[in-house]
Length: 380
Image (cartoon, rainbow, N blue to C red):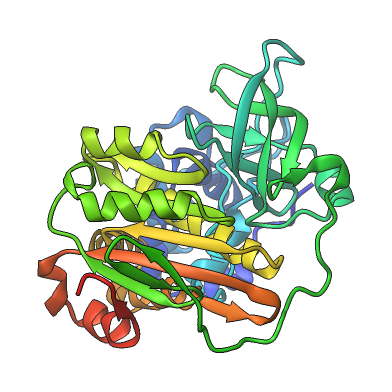
């Protein structure tokens, strides 16, 4: 049973913010919110009608279409409602526990069947643990007992086999083969991986390029990946490195997508050209959480971000939907957190960032002041 809707938190937010939040919600959140506000028959109403009912109720302080009786089948509580309220009340620090929402508790209508290989970055929303499969972007749920026993947290990388549980193409894990690239049976999270930070001093040599391990490296990219021989040489060199290699690339053209999909020894987060902002943001969030989590576990990482300017644009679009008051500030804060992932620690542990930008990004204030100013230009 999930906690009761936090009206105290909700009431602290002004009406304009409440309305903006309502317009950004999905149909399941709208239904849950309508129920809590006492609005009649929310499951029978289309999205637009629900929004009108909720907004009018917020403005007048009472339901315009009230639920007369509380009798009937108990409804499911949304796992993410508390997260939504916390976010709009600005309780959460951007990037630390950023909007890891689950749309609804799944219906388990199938108890077995054909097994599919799945992998993704774990998200935990109260009592629900799931990830978006890297290949299909479908939701894959984990047994809560397993999550508790293994002490899993947001950002852990899960690889295993799952079966479909309902018509929504949601999955349930049957077996977990690996956690953070280690055998699941032998996996034990490190209790104290906060090694002291040191100055980076070692370089990874690619053709005509020297990448500073544990540092921020940027490259001015003027062609698509599949035509840029120098960039392809970087990928080839990194793939042979004894690290976990993570790639983030958004709205890739077909040729670039095929090239990235063929990379060996890479965990790739990418979207097709003209993908929706929500899909792009999922990839940004999962890749960030993965790198951050692995770094805390003492894992060596190369994090390659293709077209950092586009990543920043997608962040601005996302935060403009969520908070029109100051989307650029929030996007900038998250972008800074991504840049700050670069670190060199004792015992030769490092997270190395390699970001590509376009000529047009050179004059972007955020990229100019918060990336270029503190990074190494490896394209010279």
